[in-house]
Image (cartoon, rainbow, N blue to C red; front, side, top):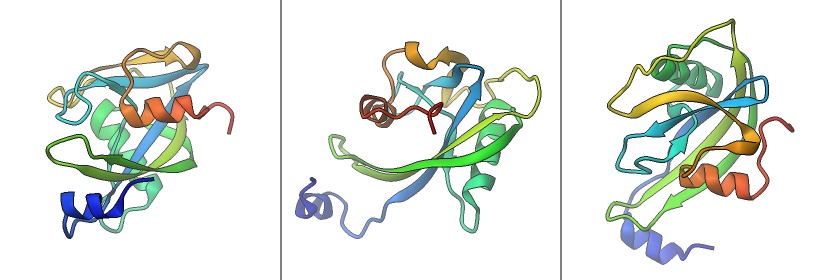
Length: 150
């Protein structure tokens, strides 16, 4: 449990941001990219991004995957939601993360459309994920999260 007084002192008047991530599946593999960001730099994470005002989770997931990878997705469904605090940084963050699952709409190859934010995309077997994982994904995996089992 996080001390609420510490959080309020670190982020007075701040509110959490909502992010939608997508477990994009192909066979027994999931799409991951290596981050280029002040938060989780050089770690592997799923495609996704901030929920825009008035947008549904499905719309956000579809838009973010397209913007980051150029891929069209299908069979989109909700998996879970997590609460993620990053208090060890000079600038603390609080994200509510909506996890979705999808498959490719047809046979496509991911493109690195945002090279300033990602070193590239590749498919990884869920039982053999690359290291290091972005901390929220690492924690989810350690807690038993598996997008293939829902």
